[in-house]
Amino acid sequence: MPEGDALHRAARRLQPLVGERLDVETPNPRAQIGGIAEKLDGRRLLGVEAVGKNLLLRFEGGYVLRSHLRMNGRWTLVPRGTTKGRPWLVLRGSRYEGVQWNGPVLELTTRAIPRLGPDILDDPPRIDEMLARLRRGDRSRAVGDALLDQRLVSGIGNKWKAEALWEARISPWRPLAEASDEELRETLAEASRLMRDSLDGKPRRNRVYRLVGRPCARCGAAILSRGQGDANRIAYWCPGCQRV
Ligand SMILES: [Zn+2]
Image (cartoon, rainbow, N blue to C red; front, top):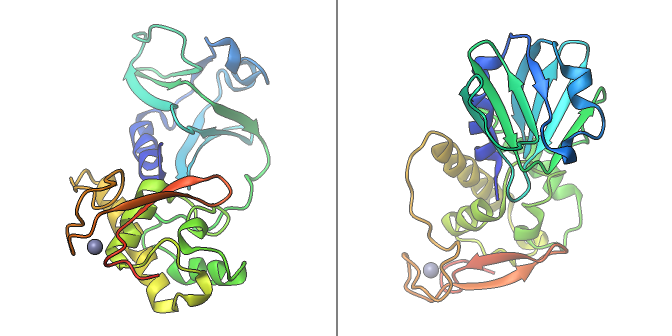
């Protein structure tokens, strides 16, 4: 699942197209609804940025193309004229083309996108504002569930949620009401640090994510997993050193 860091990498990758007038095509029939190609063809791309898990491409004329990658979507940048197959979208510049594969969300809008919490990859991250949002909601909600709510904090996905909570030694099951400000701040700071390192290409071994049954690197207890929250996303944690 692409998380915020993957979206930021995609935004960086597409920067060579910024400032250019683009030829726009939608080879895949699933992307042809909404007339994206007709509306954007020949317009100048003004900017590409990742906001949480969305990639926003701003075009002249006030158009904003929102791309959400869900599980399988991706963006590539290749030399002009070399794309084969049926991507959803091709943005062709003078030397390169940006290519969007597998959608699955491609939406053209002239409005602002839905209200999202502060982006965990803002530099520096707005920890105070994220904390205030976490404190405003349901106090019985588990920390691990709340961290995935994009209205509270945007950009954290399942993997970095699990890893940040392990670093901060907090169980994903702890209710928000029982987590101190200091603990929540530390968790958010760890998520920001881990994701920024990932964005910068620094390798790191997972400590709990997808490591069910393996011994914890810190205390040796066996890693557990269980579905969490309305979406039943799998939480991973160490019962030995992450405090409920
Ligand atoms: Zn442990």
